[in-house]
Amino acid sequence: MTYHDTRLAMSALLDRPAVKRLSDALAAVGSSARIIELAETARTAADAAASLGVAQGAIVKSLVFAVEGKAIMALVAGDRRCDTQALGRALGIAGKIGRADADLVRAATGYSIGGVAPLGHATPLPLVIDSSLRRFATVYAAAGHPHCVFATCVDELASLTGGAVVEDIAVEG
Image 1 (cartoon, rainbow, N blue to C red):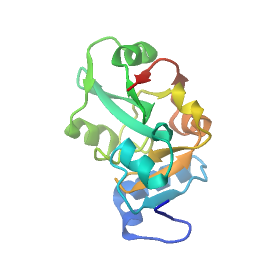
Image 2 (image 1 turned 90 degrees about the vertical axis):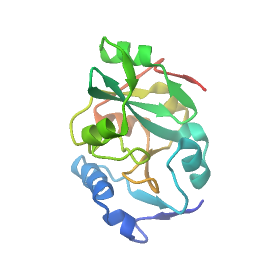
Image 3 (image 1 turned 180 degrees about the vertical axis):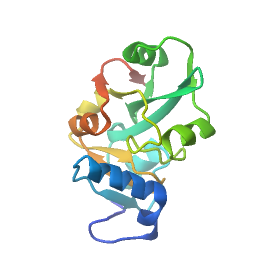
C-alpha cells in the first residue's frame, strides 16, 4: 500500500480546510476513524482501490445528484453505478434526477468533485447507502481531497451520515 497514516505523520494536505472539516466532523460524532493520506490519487474509485491495494467495490463513491436544483447523495460501492430511479424511490423523491454539476456539488457539500466526503457537508443532504458495500468489512471513503480517504465500515458509515442502508440503489457496472 502506498499511503501515510495520519497518526504517524502530518502533512500539508491534512491542514487543508476541506480535510480539516471532515476530520472535525468525524471527531464531533465520536468516530475514531483517521484520515489516510495516499501517495497516489483517489480521485476515482479505481485510483483509490489501486492506491490502497483493495477491491474497487470497497471504495465508497459519494455521488451527488440534482433534483429540481436541490442536491441529494448516494454512497455507492466503487464497482457499481447508481440507479437514479431506485435512488428516488429510496428517498421518496419524485422528479427527474440527474448528475449535479461541480458548482452544486461544492455549494451543497463544501467539497470539490474528487474529494467529496460522505459527511461534514455545507448543508444537510438526503442520503442513502448502497447495501452492496456490506460485502466488505472495511470500506474507504473520500476525506475532502483527492489524496485523502478514511476507513470505516458500513454500520459506522450509516451512523456517521444518518443515511439508511438500502437495497437496489446500485447496479453492477
